[in-house]
Image 1 (cartoon, rainbow, N blue to C red):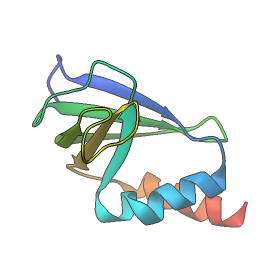
Image 2: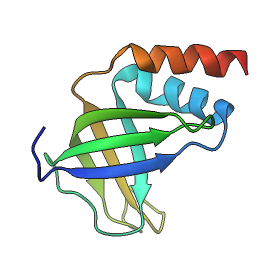
Image 3: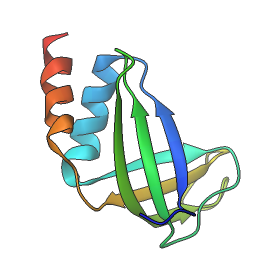
Length: 103
């Protein structure tokens, strides 16, 4: 991916949180998250790194498909809402899902 692409790190505090994240977003090929400031622009390329509870990491490249300002009509929160669609997801994701379901 481009050298000027941005990286976003997301801490996943528990395996149950990871499973919810998987069921709501990851299994559909993307992820929604929020940022306090400095949002990416639509079509920007991002590397999203999930920091899992066992201190391992999952990294995905994707394109920003959704950006919503804080406290706007479709985003009542005080943080930027971001949606990313990933280009490719590898077997490490399913390995983490299996591990989470055993915890």
